[in-house]
Image (cartoon, rainbow over all chains, first blue to last red; front, side, top):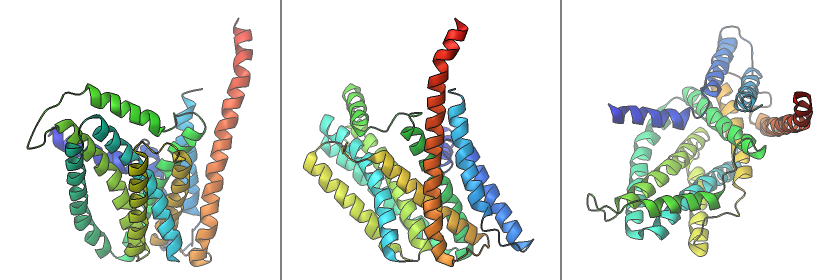
Amino acid sequence: MKQLRSFGAFWYDFIVGDDWHVAALVAAGLALTAIATHAANVNAWWLLPVFVVAALAWSLHRATASRK
Amino acid sequence: MNALPLILTVFIACVVEAVEALTIVLATGITREWRSTFQGMAAALLALAVITAAVGPAVSELPLTALRVVVGALLAVFGLQWLRKAVLRATGYQALHDEASAYLREVAAAEAAAKEARRGVTDWYSFTLAFKGVLLEGLEVVFIVITFGDNQKDIGAAVIGAAAAIIVVTIVGIAVRAPLTKVPENWMKLAVGVMLTSFGTFWGAEGAGVRWPGNDAALLVVIPAVALVAAACILWLNSRTAARTVSAPQSEVVGS
């Protein structure tokens, strides 16, 4: 059980890293882009870059705000 | 896409990983024992070969659309992690990754650990340290090679970039027999973060069904745009630090 947990923790750390908000925002951006493109027929090429920039800014803000 | 940007991107990313692995291997080998260190390295390379053989064909079996969504998401998350770390280091919020001090820490830990023979290995500590270091850094190399190579349908070019990086770092490492402290690791990490984030965003959105204006040429705008965002983040955090430094003495006066 301990080995399974450390195996899971290794992959979580490898893929998700220090801030899970980044992965969540990228996933949300991709999902919304797919919905906009397929369901609403909008070529929303700009949507994912907006989420990516927001993810970086939000993550940096969270990392530095506590050290004010 | 021309193979050269692919080779260069993979090369720079893999140099960063190879330098980190070299620091661990050198610290272990010089301080403790080369034989067990090489055994650990060999075991890690074998494990990496097995992982590559298992994951590589599975990834290439995915339909291109699904592959681009999965790989795009992973690359964007990976790239943003690298960018986050590089920006925090560039602005002093996180200590710079200093290979010299990392080497000294590894050496101190290696000297303090007891020597113990296990499973045919004369020094288990050297074996596990070299194994973990090479496996972890190697996994990132494998991930970059498979994702970039598969997406561009040019695994060969990605392998050339990775192999060149490993060969260059190994030769320089053997020549100087010291951690490669002159490598501007943080700036390289920032550059790789920009490339991974840009390619991840481009492929991810394409996989989600988007048609980029200008098709592949859009990358020529996306890459500089991500670099500009990273530069803006550095300026933003630096101005925040400067504002804090200026306001700190004032609040002390008010407080006193």
